[in-house]
Amino acid sequence: MNNINNELDTASDGTGRRDRGFTLVEILIAIVLVGVLSAVVVVGISSLTKQGSASACTASLDAAKAGTVVYYASHQNAYPASFTELTTGTANLPAALTLSSGVVINPADNRKIAQGTSWTLTMTNNVNAAPTFACS
Image (cartoon, rainbow, N blue to C red; front, top):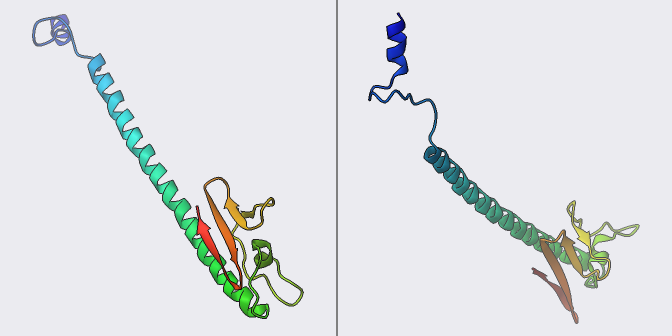
């Protein structure tokens, strides 16, 4: 019985060593692979974040244009001078534009709508014409 245990403890190549774990090279290869996969994921998430930000700005731009049309029709063919006029209703007229949550009007210059630091929607007034909007 003792002889059988000795044979199990000895490697088949006669060196007396058994493989009981991973080598340093195998561990380093696994760490490098995990690092490469992590880098790919981070780049992918960054790209998705930028696309989402661009979509949010485009949606707000479209909403501001539509709000301008509503404002023009309900205010005796007058265009709004600022985003504040678009988003503030009166006693008999509702606001022409409702901002989505997280979007704020810049208090220093109420012609700009900003959401965090990712994008800015700017309104430029034109003489006797509809204002123009730009995303940046």
